[in-house]
Length: 222
Image (cartoon, rainbow, N blue to C red):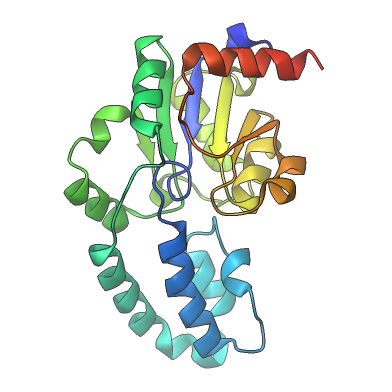
């Protein structure tokens, strides 16, 4: 994809817009150790899945009766969470919009979670043209459905879109959508995610529209 085709920027939420992954790792780490002590590291493998997928896939069967308790604890946890932007994010996305780039959040989070975000960050919605949540798509990451739906909202072809992701499932979803994928090394190490993306960044400091175009152009010239 040449950089002139760059029309839309599609952002995952946790670990990409907000520095929240360490908080979720604590919550799900505690739940996984409680209910799945035999499967260390499970909390890392469920990143990018919807709550329904997590519960149905890992907290069903004999422990299904505990699902309402887990959901209640998660809801309370999310109400108390802090939603701090990744360094440089706000100025970066505002610069993209000044250059006519459409912006969207594409997250596996649900509407109740997003209400917590809006309460803590009242200006959040003003940064995006579209916000897609788990209620907007049938299949979750690593399926490309969510990113393809986001592209269709903007009447863009997949090759016109940039995906910003941090989780393995999210990176695979962007790749499966045949979009250019920017990996955020906020949740997983750079060397672990680099095979799944076109380039890796650690934050948005010193990054703007022109720099992003330059990075994309240099990558595609390799």
